[in-house]
Length: 207
Image (cartoon, rainbow, N blue to C red; front, side, top):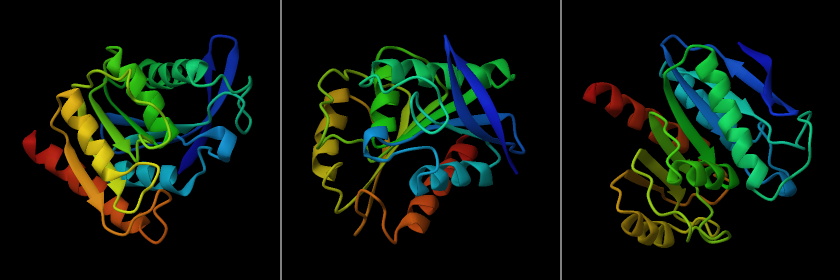
């Protein structure tokens, strides 16, 4: 069962929802663009969290500054990176050392910026990174990226553009394309959850 938590980010207070898993692993999930209605209650964000919970992870989804009941105001992606740091730091303070960073759309872009700058997490999962709507030219390397998922009909995160970026980043993540999936995974949320749980199962087998 999820419980509401408060995350301190300097002078700001961010709201989050935490769900206890059965293992010592944790995942922090970042939501899509707040100026376009994105928040931690987005169906894709919830789907990501539920997939990780099923594999034993304690999950934390949170609202960026200025979203929902989080204090502050939208900061055009700069302050939002600090929000992600604060959310991961919150879980680290709770004793979690094995922390995965997952993000959807704008959330994936914020996470990618941190990881590219050398911010270390155990694993990095991107769902529909918005390469068709936002520049990723400053992202140079993301060595801990294990999985990237997008829809075959996603115009905001087109598979072919993501594929080019993967080559440029010099990484070899699992790259999953969900046939007929659009950016919102309309009618494809179960397929998305399956891809995520399959990936996590493969990570378990690798040890």
